[in-house]
Amino acid sequence: MTTINSVIELQIILALLMICGIVLTKKGVLTADGRKCLTDLLIDLILPCNIINSFLIDLSSEVLIASLEVLLIALGIQILCWLGGKVLFGFAEPGKKKVLQYATICSNAGFMGNPIIEGIYGQEGLLYASVYLIPLRFFMWSAGLSCFTKAKGKDVLRKLAWHPCIGAVWIGFFFMLTGISIPSPILRTLRY
Image (cartoon, rainbow, N blue to C red):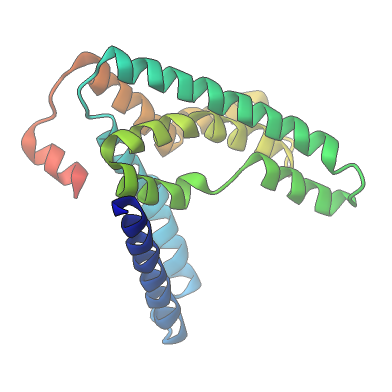
């Protein structure tokens, strides 16, 4: 029953935050530029800090094996989604086909999913969610990007390598595997 209560509470919190956004937009406080700024802040700072924090758990063989299993399952799912997008939307007109393919390849799980996962399953759940999202981010910036542009392989790799969430995963893995402690003021800042 506790999990159901947690899910309901998280849904109420998210609904209240959305209502705040609607009210602020209606009042003219939150503009299109403000929304872009908040989105950039979320993707470039808040999610990466959240991801790094999720990796700061005691490493055990159980956690490492589970992370590898999650990674392989996620990779399989992404490959199936990519292939499904190629096969399922042959009937659609070209403009819609690209959108349908992109939507099949790329979910918004990392955007809204991380706070929900952390709220329900805690830090370890967030770790597994972050690992799960590695293939999604790779497919988003490669196959997803190719739905709308003619991106060069080098450009795709550069975007992948420098995406803040991918960087956060590598930083998180580094701290998890080495066991190096982050100094307390930095750690607390990261968590806040």
